[in-house]
Length: 266
Figure 1: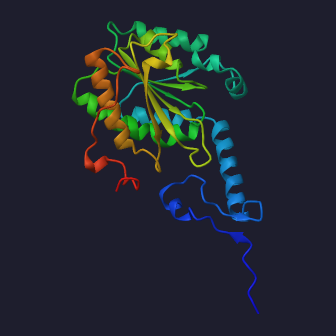
Figure 2 (figure 1 turned 120 degrees about the vertical axis):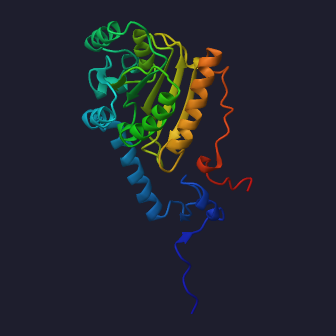
Figure 3 (figure 1 turned 60 degrees about the horizontal axis):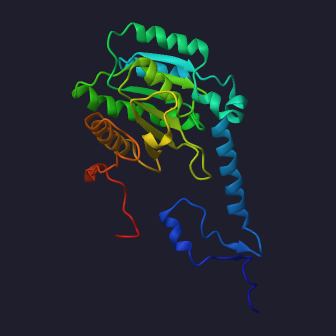
């Protein structure tokens, strides 16, 4: 007697799944997804939603940075809570009054400005920041300290969006600002962090004047490679006095920290 055909029909592209976490070649059961991929999708969707609503653990971040000898100041955006933050992106781009006043007081104690300021913001995934911000800052500060950069206190901004770094950099009179921020969670990456670098930051700076390093996470771009790119961009920004579309990442990563093999060209 012939055996019954299995209910799941395999996809001929299935071998490509070893090269990507993207949801490809999942097969089908009739006209639907097989049960396992369907349940995995629901789990990934739940993790992405949780990442968006996960509150930033400020004190562990502050403690970790202060133990490394860094001055840390915690601020808040004008978005009073998470719901407002999600519904009013404009309020996440500016500091609230108390935070602005605190920042101005700190800036008044510095006779000169700073070469660079670093901002850590929850963005759309506080989880990404909690996992990746400190390792990235450890690596980049080690390089900048050796080169004598004047680095501002680290600002941790709750309910912050990318442009909130412009106000921080402007008040501190920083030559450039780098904001480390949680990116919008994807269904395979709820923990992805981005870095946005802006030369001569000021409120109202357009996004075209920023450089972005994206997908910093364990399964994506490594912290070492991200810092290699960031250091290059910061050095070039200071030399050329610009960031954004006119500044391209032309750095060549050493083999020790280069990304993994590209199956398209290897």
